[in-house]
Amino acid sequence: MGIVKIGDELHGEIRKASTVMVRSINAQAEYWIKIGMLAEANPTMSFSDIMRDQMKLADVDVRKAVGG
Image (cartoon, rainbow, N blue to C red; front, side):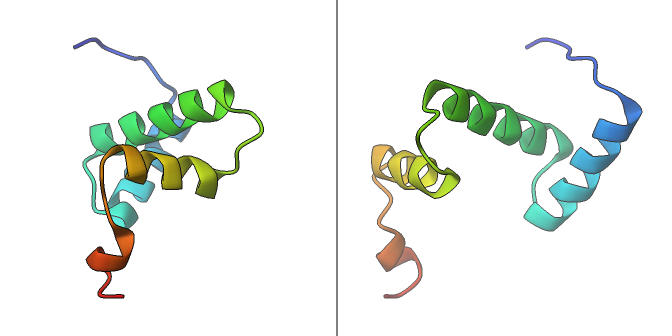
């Protein structure tokens, strides 16, 4: 585990987003970092494509999760 230095403004935005997304501040920052890395590695994929692939990799059946 390391320390990442970020600006106060970005930290504030992470804090606000973490409240909405029901994550800790650290978990929200990790999520944004992971999505950003995946987006850079897959520039032709949309956010939805990336999330669909990640759900498949985790063997999540979204239809079952939402009762569909």
